[in-house]
Image (cartoon, rainbow, N blue to C red; front, top):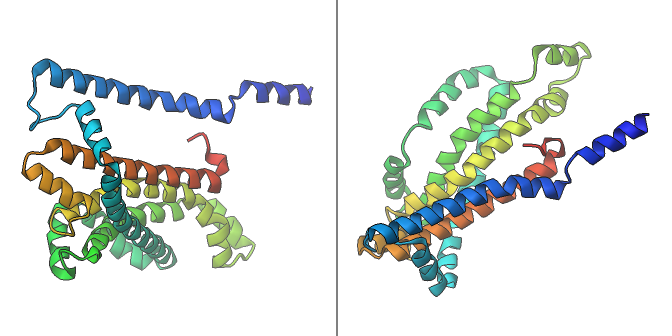
Amino acid sequence: MKVVTTLSQSRSQPAPLAGWLRSLWPPLLTFALVMGLWEGAVRLFGIPLYLLPAPSQILTTFFERPGYLLGIGLVTFGNALVGCTLGCCCGVLMATLCVRWPVVADGLVPLAVAASAVPIIALSPLMGIWLGSISPASKIAVVTVMTFFPTLVSVYKGLVSPRADALLLLRSYAAPQRAIFLKLRMPAALPFLFNALRVCTSLSMIGAVVAEFFGGPQNTLGVYIKTQAGILRTREAWSAIVVACLYGLAFYLVVALVERAVMPWNKHR
């Protein structure tokens, strides 16, 4: 009887590939609908090219020089990746210290919530003055600051999320702080960590591109978008925006795959 029940349950559950495809078609359908409406609106209302090009025109412009666009996108993505790695690692480390010494959390976590509300457009010029407007260090610093505070707040919330009775149980067995952290706090914080990482993948690309608006070498997405938009070459500017989206999506998918490998029990999310 138990075997029959197990077999029936396994048959009723969708295959991993089928479930993945089923979850993929709604965003693809929405994307196709939005692109169709965009294309139709531009052609129906005769919107000038310098105001808003059609998606087909943007795609044509992208395929005219895909190697160059992907190359400058790789430079921007490199700054975003380094800054995101630094910001997330520092955020995890600081969250660990906040759990170990609650007085640090009392002073730092409220400050982190307030600092995360600072607009990046106000921070980028200052980083350019301090670290050099053309230097990649200023772009990396902007991304580091943008990703540090969300990671700190989210991971700290995950580390303090275990129930009090679970903590009391481990302490009743004289478990050391290291064992409590590794066996209880860290597994509880993993979903919070990956939620922060998924958010930071988008924030890192946004921060890197915006920081480049205030100065940088010519072979970067932000400078290219600003230059092309300044002379009303909107098709070229939009094609660079598409490249930024592609790198951001690839970064997000890598984090999602790592999350599935680290937390296989969380595949339904």
